[in-house]
Length: 267
Image 1 (cartoon, helix red, strand yellow):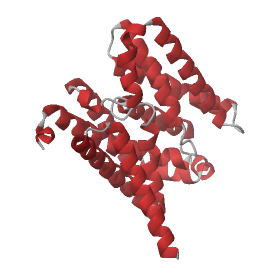
Image 2 (tube, one colour; image 1 turned 45 degrees about the vertical axis):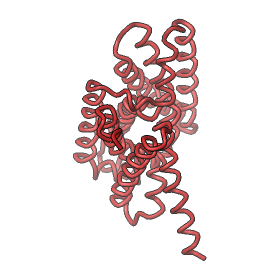
Image 3 (cartoon, rainbow, N blue to C red; image 1 turned 135 degrees about the vertical axis):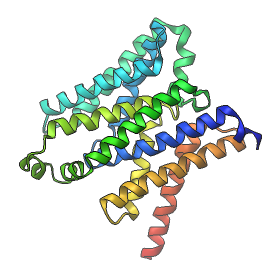
Image 4 (cartoon, rainbow, N blue to C red; image 1 turned 30 degrees about the horizontal axis):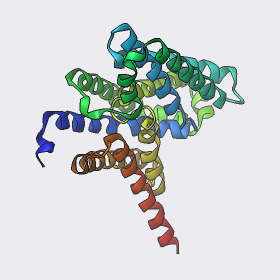
């Protein structure tokens, strides 16, 4: 039990709780926009930024964040160019991100081990600077959602009505995509690029099975996300499992229990 009082575990817990709060907040809007896969796309682009950060000797998460922001602008641009096939924007940016990351791997094989930790997560290696970055992103996301909750609700449930009412749809779309990019870029060190989309989507999927309103869905998704993060970290500490994987699997267990319970009630 001593591990729960170790500084590295406390930092991991704080970082996990902060991401557990912000990821589902963005995930709710992504699911409503039918852009659930954007998490994987921005995560892979962030990895390319992390790789370049190691290559240039600058803060890897900062470079990953910059790449994710640039990718978010590119996605919005391509979504407008292919209005009928908006999902093409995700496929194109993901392909480019993977290709660029692979190219950067070959340019600096000496740092590949460090970069690989961002693929699978390394929450136990979070330091104070990482926590401050995560905290800053968390405050920004909470502030934006709190100040623009009604506008976002209207836009994502009826975009045409929101446009007619005078809402600047372009601004809000870019804002949500940019916030998502920020959340993903700071999440990859916690759960890894390969699992980051799980924090965006699985808590939302769980909440949609039980929520009675949009606001209820937002609250439930955050609550379920935090349960998954804390349970996953506890299991990882007790049994020496990979923390990113146990967090995601904990969320999947919650989803499976909900599905079984719903089936039993119907029967």
